[in-house]
Structures are given as C-alpha cells and as structure tokens.
Length: 335
Image (cartoon, rainbow, N blue to C red; front, side, top):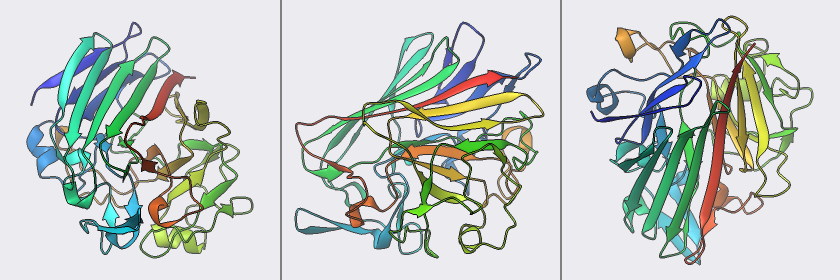
C-alpha cells in the first residue's frame, strides 16, 4: 500500500493511505518525549480490506453517523439508502468514503491533499459530489483536517474523521483512565438502534456530564438506560457553536500515564464520543495486537446523527453553487 508521510518541525508524524483516506499511524510524544503510535490500525492493506471494524482512521461520508430507516426526504422526494446497520444507514453505506480509493497529492512535507468524486446515486445519495480533504501537521502540534465539497444537485453531506485513539501509546490498554472534558451542556439521547430520539437533553446530573474533566470509566457502569443502549458511550454532544465559521474547543482528553493530552477544535455543531464498546478482540491489528473492549476512543466532529429526518437539528443540506466547508483539529501536548 502506498503511504504518504507528513511531519512537523517537532517530530510529530502521520502516515496516510489512499484507501479510505486513512491515517494508519500517528506518532506523538509522551511526557518524556518518547514518540509512539496512538491510533489503531493494521500493518497491511489486507487488514483494512478484511477487518470487522471498517472505519479505523478513515474519512467518513457521505453521511457520518446514522440515518434512520436508511431513508430521508429532500425537495419532496424520498431517497432510499443502502441499509448497512440493521434497518439504518451508517457512515455512508458500503460505498462510503471509508471504502473507496482517494487521489492523494503530497503538497509539502507537512501536508497531503486527498480528493474524491462521489457519483450521483452512490448508495442512494443524490448529486455528484466533489470532495477535497487536506491533512496538515502544523508546527503547533495540530493535526488539521479541512474538508471542502461541491455538488451538482441538492444533496445532504456530513463529513467526519474516524481515528480510534489510545493516548497511552500501548494499544492493549483500556482508555477508561483517560480524563475527558466535553464542552457541551446537552446531548442527543438515542433509541435502541442508536438513532436520536429528537430530544436535546441536559447532561447535568447524568453520566454524560463531562463539562468538568472526568475519567471515562468513572461512571460507565452506572445504571443508566442510555449507557445500556450504547453499551457505554456512543452519543452525540451538542456543542456551544455561536457562529459556523468559529473554531471552538469541543473536547479535551488526557492520559495521566503517558502525559499525552489532545484537544479537539471544530466549527461543527456536534461531536460524537465513542468509547470502543464494540471492540471485542476479534480484530488483530498492528504487530498482531488484538483490539479489545474499550481500548480506544473516537471523537468525531459532525452535524447530528439523523439530521435529515429531524427538522429541528442543524441542516445538512448542500445546494449547487454553494461550498461545504468543515474543519477538525486534533491538537497535541504533554504534561
């Protein structure tokens, strides 16, 4: 598999492949300066092609997260999508952006540009959509992901990134001791299919309150219906977005063992926190390490799940002659 490498002046390094525009390695220093890989993945392309977990390190589209009953209405027309998550559509279906080959161009030592054209009708989505995604490692120790897109027909679009992180640098260890803060007073509860119920619920007084730094595992066994439904945390938090052009801190996460800290910044209205609840050891990754229960987390910046079917959620409609633009920044430090 052809690998594109980007590095910054401080030694941070990311390796990217064209299949799924995936980040397959991300090396960051711990508190002693030791560089270690902090993302799950595989040593060969075959691993990604044959994995039970399809999304390690991948670009996600056309629609990140779930769409209920794999259908939506747009301009008085019902569009039916491929069902790949029970009765629902997840992460764009089988021809989602994770499962196609992008065109990659090395811009400079710190930047790679990825492009892809999604044809009208791909897995049921309308419009030919042209997407550009730029990965850059800045000298502020930021992995910056900028998405832009256009369409020739009114469509829906919700792009995100799906790295599975473990800040310990040891991919056998649980992430339950990581300390997480999410800058959100509300979240969107889900039903048994992990589709939002439509409620925008306060986190206060619940295990979903990460407004102050809290260990992921501290309340994960609480007798809470939403934790039971998600088998842990697998929910969308509603960010305090005042202006779509603003880049705001959405979350911070810290591993006391390694000293690694990661901040997530975005202009998106939501962020999905997933705690690796469906990892079960059946996938063996780099160096033949089994990826076990809750050995990774994802923080995916996004519009809300099922937004096309929930009129009070922020719109995901993209019109011709308009530009889609979204940014996610993962900023690293150590303490």
